[in-house]
Length: 346
Ligand SMILES: [Mg+2]
Picture 1: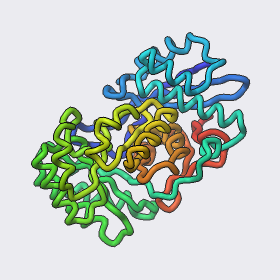
Picture 2: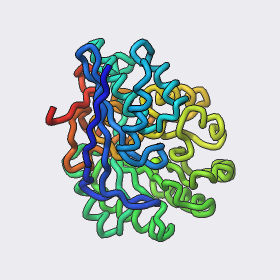
Picture 3: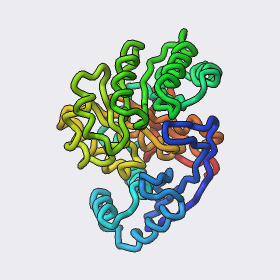
Picture 4: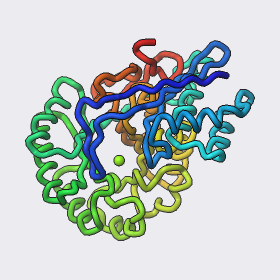
């Protein structure tokens, strides 16, 4: 079993501004795992809160862990021992995605079928970052014209306050009038309790479907109050990383948004979905700044989710990989063996 690494800079087509800052691109770590002549591919999009904020840190952690004898172990066993060894979540995600890709390629099956799943039927949301209204009016038609996109996730929680949020939201609605599109909102923890309540009531009156992470991570004790007479379903993102987090907040939210980079890959994602369902919660899968490699891994389990936000690859210029295809707004996994993501120059 051999592990190889490649770091590629992924520049964004449009910079993404959220409540916590502005992102123009990322240096992602691509992992190739070769065994018995078959290569599985994985990808890490670095992140401070995902445990490794540089590709070097991710590569070092994986190299250290890979010294062990992994050949005889199942993916679930490898995952467990990597968590025990302190491998950062986003680095573990790269390895885990490569292991599942390898296994499905070995079986000669698309990964979604190996996992006993169908294809997703829900549309994927495409993200609109925090921008002045005039930028939004220009950008939204670029996202919707002839792309088949039918859902927009609007980033609010602007540092300029909720009036700026309302102005931007209104500009998105105005610019998307005439398109067949639904609106969801992600505050990325940018509101206090009072603003969250005000905004959720206001957004419910403007046809929004749900709100993601209204309060900052660490302020979960205020969720009970917000949840009691909420005007919109509440999803947690930053406050919920792994399956074991779910029981803490299950009674004060409506759903959870998992990300492969945040939870450590497909193995933990399957666990999150199972635990969320056991608590009667809705499920969502989102992404970090990922190319078509990790996005294709997410698409392979897309059928498990009520909502899908796998769109980061659509905002890359260029995406170094291809894989799952956007067909009439739905991200559809490839029929090739594995997760279907592959490097374009390979
Ligand atoms: Mg989010």
